[in-house]
Image (cartoon, rainbow, N blue to C red; front, side, top):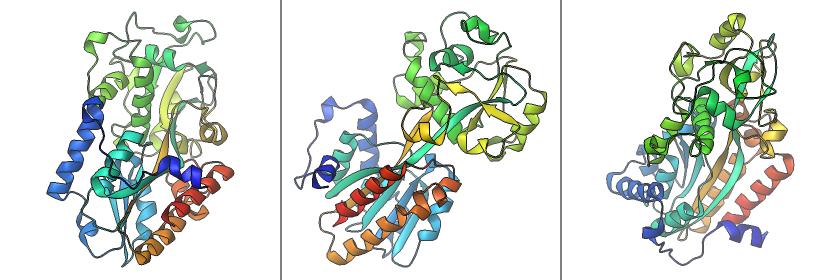
Length: 359
């Protein structure tokens, strides 16, 4: 257990990273931490007399914030809809122990910078996944689409001739028109789709038009073609699944909708998922890392080195609560918010590491 924890936690010596060797995104992240510390963007609750502060990142969606909000108490602050990594890594909460639920796995450089800038040891442990799926009407044909071909079929900035039917992409695809019901702007589904498209975009689109910054690159790579084949989902980010069910009644063979994996259960019998890179969006495939259109949900613990025994005890209780089966299990509150649970052995390992780290 000691070796497992030591791989993730920092040493007791302040870290001094080589900023010149860092990517532009990481340098921007460092600047944002500095601004957060100066301007106090971590929120009012973090300024109160709370011994533990829990942050949930806005990219996780409002459902995750709502799932964590009941953990708020007189000794435990909860801040939702924030840049959770930035907020947890500032020095504003003083010796309070900070927990941040993130829509990604922070890099080791980010962990080192957070530790060095806040006088803390930092641990990141997985708690689950969020994922998207390609849904087609239940009456349609089910097929597998590669990530590369998905980019060629849907992306506005793909190089080469734009296919109008799936079979123009190659053998094994149906002779059916390409059409797509887009994910709501700003939704988790759109974020995951953009990230997946970015992974194949670099070698499949003109280099001259590729933005350098990550946000611009995601928007560029994930932009859908603007023609009759693309429809926006009516109702926006809070539309729910009714708009997809209505679409499925008239959508033809080969039509696809970008949906979250969590929406599939509500659409059972109305749509069926397609395979991506020959993998179904099953919980087992997602938890095992075999399904490409998914991203990790990570708990980052920022443990001030000066935290006293009383605060560590309270933090240990918060870690138990956050990592309990009632929260991260397959029937837990995070699952109800669309998070796919880790496998049982992985949940146990993550829980053990988190609690041992605070000892």
